[in-house]
Length: 88
Picture 1 (cartoon, one colour):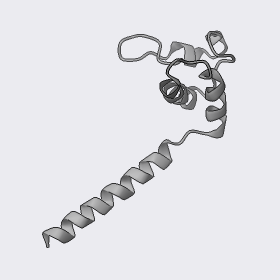
Picture 2: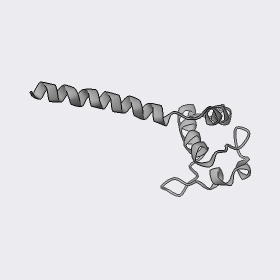
Picture 3: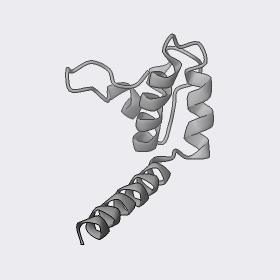
Picture 4: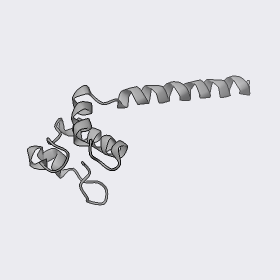
């Protein structure tokens, strides 16, 4: 009986994690804009992650690889828990 329960929990965990990854996938718009924005970033993966979060919330990404944040005030004004700019 314990084996059936443990198997059920394991299968549930696997299915839940795969659903979570699909739901976290970014839009084509955000993916393409963030690839350009982060193309010269030192930590490319981290830049893509935060750019994607900001793009999904703001529906815009400033042009270029740095600066130009006045083009998107929502993106510019988003802060992390330490009060620093969240979006690259």
